[in-house]
Length: 286
Length: 286
Image (cartoon, rainbow over all chains, first blue to last red; front, side, top):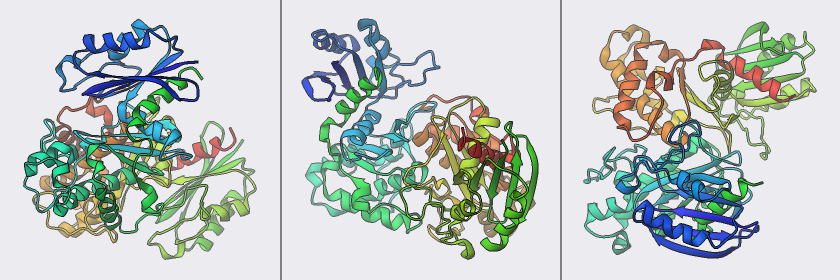
């Protein structure tokens, strides 16, 4: 069997095909413009293969509620051309095969659990900290969905005493994403994160926010591991700062694995999402 | 088959036996003193029956990690006599039958999902707001466990601008439990909650905290329903205040069921935990 996968991001779509061992045979990167333009190139790529199933890990918010009349749609995204667009429907119309559908970060969580940093475990959280903050989770070996999908990046956290920035989230102002995603760092300091690499106070504030979020995820989901990815986490000094702050906040209340294992970087790097989407494809035909 | 159940609380143990339809045939309430004293009475009660399985919903924190050497123990509880006590082991030593083991609030979540306020759904959160704040969850139809169990009551929330109380949580000071559980209300105002029923500002502050917590649970777990129980929630005016504040905080970011349904009171009242524990017993022999 040949599996197809789409990691649909706000900037680019990555499409890949793999064999049953999930070894990627070919991949392509397509700019995210309008649904029509972008999907035309997706179809050009997949049309070359006799696919058995497709897995999609999409930017969101998306409708994952199978009881909903807009199941499979991209919903309230600020990317106008994709707002209320029946993404899953368009793929299903083109290919009469099973199609798995979840968020980009849920797909990444599945990828890291089955093939990466959370290998052998049955639960994990994957959090991406980049132009936005989004989280996915696997619980009891299955992707977390309920009425909808997680939107962990929009959690409210306590503001740092030195905070001067009002936050950029159009919905919540200074929610976690609004004050700790990449654009918040840039807007607060007038420079991009990688230009601030040596500014200790920048990363202490960032760690202050991320550690609170990780504490909350831990208390709600009790995952076996939390994997932190995304552009902001390329600042590797952040990991130890986040672990220190997390340890202080938790105050020994619950038993946890050693924090060097518990709060980890992605083992699949930028391939977490596409790998998870291939795994999701395989789940549709198992 | 006859099922036995223990709802083990910090103040009292409720034990019950039921038939396969979960109709309770007999129940007994036993004060929580020392493990030896309390379990002696538990044994006296259960010894009368030919049980097929037992379900335990226990106060905590407890060890629910089957890979752990202290699986089945009550762990870091402030109730000294029960600290590091092998509760599950004691029950299993007495009765050579399958025994299910989870938290009191996880049991209540299961009860409300299968027989109560979240009937017909496959996910819910049950939050008790009383002398402490604790939450349990069902995800994809199964009890949520991971490395451990949820400890949702200890989440950090933003302090109300009028807050004067430092919080009473011995671990986290002013975490949610520290500033919004019953004792916080009593310590802040010098009166018990039911004596403050007409003081609007008391319940607005309470709603401010609970709504933040509910927002965070929603963004992480995406449950189909949240059931609020416990002594503090007997102040029924709280429900509409929590819904209003929650709606304001969420700012329409994600699609949710009507809030009158989404944020609900328990349908099983004080029977949620014992009912869930009976259901858990049945799961051990299905």
